[in-house]
Image (tube, rainbow over all chains, first blue to last red; front, side):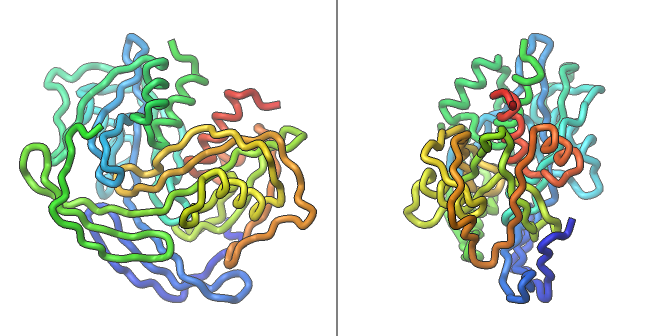
Length: 181
Length: 181
């Protein structure tokens, strides 16, 4: 769907980093006027709603610099070049939690900030986890702590704003609708 | 919570725009090593889950440049300086849909992209809408079309990826849990 399309007549790349690229597009609007759009390009990400055999949700706590606070989120991470979302989901699950699974079910995908960024999150579900013998591998310059919570505990953490991001908020509703133990 | 805190020893502002600011923070990690963080600063936003008297969800379709496609989303918009989230929610509802309400209920708030951005969305619910006589006011350089959908229609649109963003995906689950008519 291209309704109300904004046609680009010039793109200026302001910055290309490890995670984001910032472009300013000059566009022609549907009424013929022109405007500028600030666009963050992002490689995309995955996240996993993972339930243990005890019916608990697997979460990771890490420091989130943009907010200057540590946050509790479902396991997630950025797509590497040429990596499929499903491979990435499995890799991030293993690296961050020390669990693996041979049964990842696609839930949905969504753009996180459609007004200014093209970041998409591909979301998976599994309730078939196996512990890796070697434990979580971790990732360079990532400091992460594992949590396993009941729905009630997770909802309390959401009230306390320790769970405070879109994909994890979505995951809690999804879990509830699917029927938490 | 400051667990695994990353202490900033230098900030470089790369770009300051109308919507986003891009900073590169140089940080000291918990293990004493250093790293850089790409940070998008955003003023924050609101969104409204608004149900008509017929029990339909109010949505708006608009072109989203980062994805180069038009998307159907719940009414939303950026906070103006010194504007409260609730005032902003009411203003965006009126501007984009031509409805108003004297009963906006806070649902939750969440950060959309905690890995690289500080954008927060404050989410409201109302099923008490009144039509403004003058209709939607619109906003400079915004082209928006109004839709009112049943849950079934909205879920089909999500399957077709015309609804394809985090806040609207969240809204559909929330509506379902609350009990759609």
